[in-house]
View 1: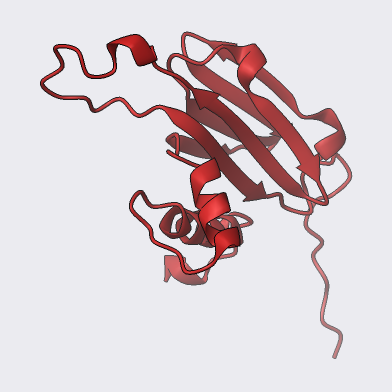
View 2: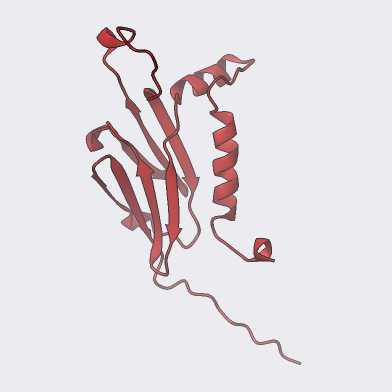
Length: 149
């Protein structure tokens, strides 16, 4: 039954899954444009999304990335978060038995709800965790409509 409840993030979650499949490592493409997009997103940071009565909160793991190296934009209700993480190329293969930490560029995009107040989005970063707070418009609350008989 819960799948039929309205959630403003249903579309956002579907977009996230589709973008995640598109940017999977090892994805092969047949056109030059597709390869360019894949090359621009080498990895995808983990994101938690929380909704409160006041707004939405995105918590993004970005260890090893300076806040000044993260680009956050909103264009036509599309929130884009991008940046890159580099490793020291000098030590890339010296002595490593295993490398699991991914480097390269990332891009995460989220469609904002109509309730989102994109003019007042705030972001802060501490200890490799980026927190983006998106307030809701104050005047948009659900309306109850009485059915007349």
